[in-house]
Length: 466
Image (cartoon, rainbow, N blue to C red; front, side, top):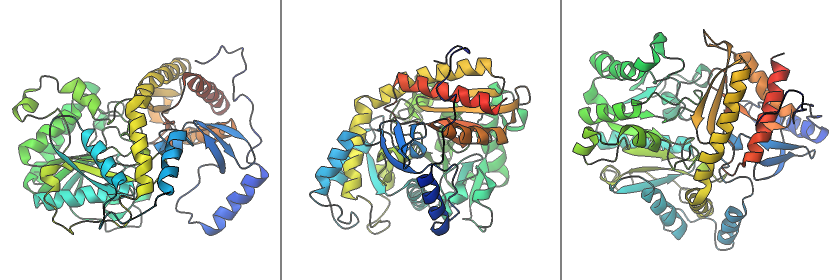
């Protein structure tokens, strides 16, 4: 928890960063690597253990970003490293498109078993989240014989052409890349904090669902032409937005009424980050118990037809995949889709261990430590007017900074300044949405490390919001 104002906070003093070695490498990077990727601050990593990282000048930082929610089991987790070492001594790769290896079969079995209910599931492995999105929309279009895809404003699904066409979080991600993939429509996400057109928060779920079914379907997107609705159960780049209660359930019902497939992008919210294996499972618990619609279809709540995973699945190794109902995946004939590197044995060895660690305790840790961190951040909210909202689940938490709590005007410049200032005070964080700081640390975070993060964060607030 944060300390009394009279006690010096960790992070109260700035670090002498970047150091000379970091500066040299930062300049070398600028000379040879594409500037399209951007650099949020001059951190140059040398090593990491758990939630701690060190730069090439020997400066230590608390990592509350985890490589954009990727390093789920923490840096250099010994069991993940050992699994990779064991596989490395056997072989690294044999194309999964043409051949079989035990690691890829095992990870597919674990992913299929992770889905709730009694349905049968099949898996297609990829190398990244954007590849998984491309595979999901390709499968949805092929399986339904339809072309249209409905995504949501504020969404982020990747930067390859299909996934970029679905993405609608920042215009710079689309600028200069038109024409995009045709047949993509964008609806309103049920954002309870900044509701579309100022709708009352208790009406936002029904209003956003009605917009799809009563407006879009009747004007620009005939439901008989829509192959899938795709969304993040918790929006990531859009601002760590937890949708209003009943939104996912309502989308599931719309899809069922019109023969549309439901796709969840769990690239950032999945693999234990929210305290459950998949983020959508919170909505199954909250909204689907006793639901007559789900019972009539013998379905386990608002479960998707296709789920996309990546990021935390490999704890830093490049791996992703889609998990689809067997009845849908079977629509793909042999040769309909493939990937040279998908099923890479080294990446799958890491993923197999990650899943075991997450299901064996780390997602419970995300629940426990996440609640502790959330409590501390809400304490800061009660004391600093610049914090408009604190939201999230597990260890996927967003802190929304505003210029005015009543108007909720985003404090964009200040949020960016917070990110840069936190680096100078020994903590790695990232922004998302208009003006949100995201906390997505490794799932091994301890309460003591959460307390350190809160202190460094408060010191950063005091420095930026003078």
